[in-house]
Length: 483
Image (cartoon, rainbow, N blue to C red; front, side):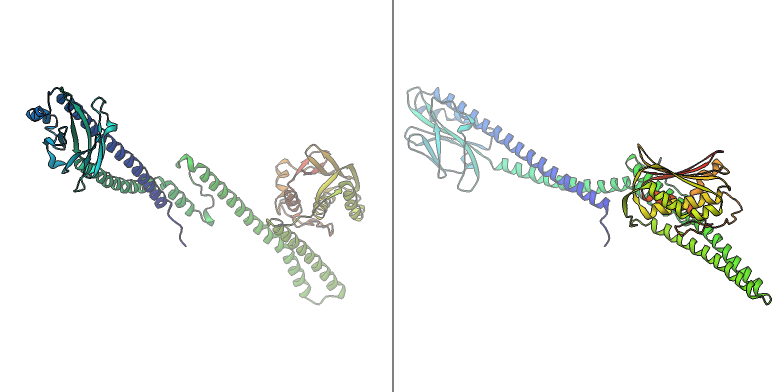
């Protein structure tokens, strides 16, 4: 199943976010405009009612209301939405103006209210200030929204008349509806525009990622040295590019190491096979005695053992590099184990006229079999290069960082340029790559396969420790550090 596009997902997310913002902002603006329009209209109604009250208070009698009707109705002239009605003390309509805008018959009811389209509208007493809180809303017989205020007016002769100021709100609602529709249209257009622009901008912003992918696609088996330029990518992607380059570096190093390993393995396996083939061809060239054939078989057997050790070591290195390689950790006395390993090599040491000595005191937590194999490889290596009559020392002692195991022997020093590389697979200090005699150890002695020290380094890496070599005119020392 193909994954979703990041560009499309982000563009839709930006579009949805913009839509939510537009809805919230548009709703806020609509409500704000509605409240502002309503407040202005209510203020206009209140001011008209106050003005009408002041003018009516200057009239002597209710009969004079009709005579001064033009003066009173002039308050609502010029505003087609406003209407006015004035009722005398008996409830009879005295003055009316622009009733067609509100379309409602109103008659006084009781002592303090007016009935308008079935709605009872309280009248503000003549001695009470008219405020916006006194405005009442209702709908006329046609369903048109109306807002208005009713008030009593005390004339000079003491009579009380009623004044009703009302406003048809349909034009305001139409204005608000038009404003809402405009917000919807421009909001939808803004969301679509934001989505499209976001898609284009995100696509442009993702171009460095496509460039990284294009650069990575150029990496092949023959071009593992290709790297992605860090300077040309945004800072947010520098860590990714650096990690990819580090991965390519490891792959390049691993591939080169594998290529060297394969070439060295082929070279080392070819030597014993060539020896067996050559010796066999010579033996078959003419009839031989039984002793000669027996010597040939013994020589071939020795070469077969060498091949077997080489294959065993290669398989061990392959298994050790697997992430699920199992270690059986335990605590043991390192000096006792060094003594046992030394006793195992005692016969070989006597034949080589080399003395062995174990010193120190330390308790170690490690895989016992792997520990034995690592020390055996180092001891076999030391026996091959220690001159006759010299001494090999096995030492174990605890340090502040862990346990330190040292295998030292007297002999020719190793040149500094070889000290680090001697732990590489199939690396030999001798450039002729000549085979040295095998110790014959069954504890994993490397013989002449060139893998013994590489196995030691792998074992130390499995334990999270290190191995290094030191060499001078006095001795050569291989140091295992278990942390």
